[in-house]
Image (cartoon, rainbow, N blue to C red; front, side, top):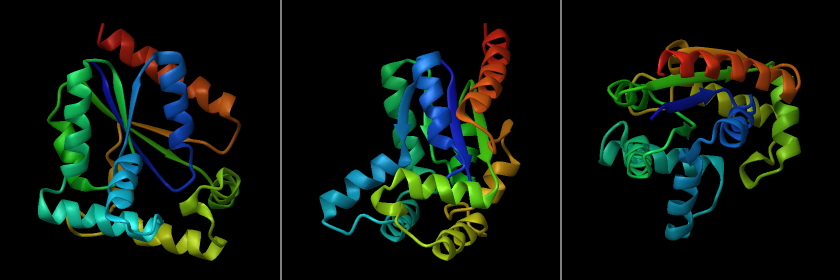
Length: 188
């Protein structure tokens, strides 16, 4: 059973890699964003990026720095299939997953202007923002000191594989396939 975590900058293509892994590699998808969205809806709070960040940080403070991904990992274990956990954002999450067998961390990045266009195009509730807000959100999430706080830069620096996604989906899929072929041959 392969476990892949995916981290990256806003709009870089995490969901595109997930799409490939589900369709071509038959992975099961577990999303931090979906987990948090469900919790936010249960609590009757506004569904936006600030609420997601606040709730994720509260859950990590209350339980552990890796609380959400540990929950998702346990769900994956029950299924017993290769899975991808999307939106790894903290040092604590990476450190917890590193203790698991057959875990690999993917990171994806792209030019900020390209990423903003992608965010605007996907038009989700949390993506209807100005370019400046987009940049401010990213700056806020890139660095922190605590193991349970968002630190995408640290996560990306500790990835096993990094994808630069300034091109087309098809170009990204070719790169992901190369990595998956390597992992499949390594893990038999």
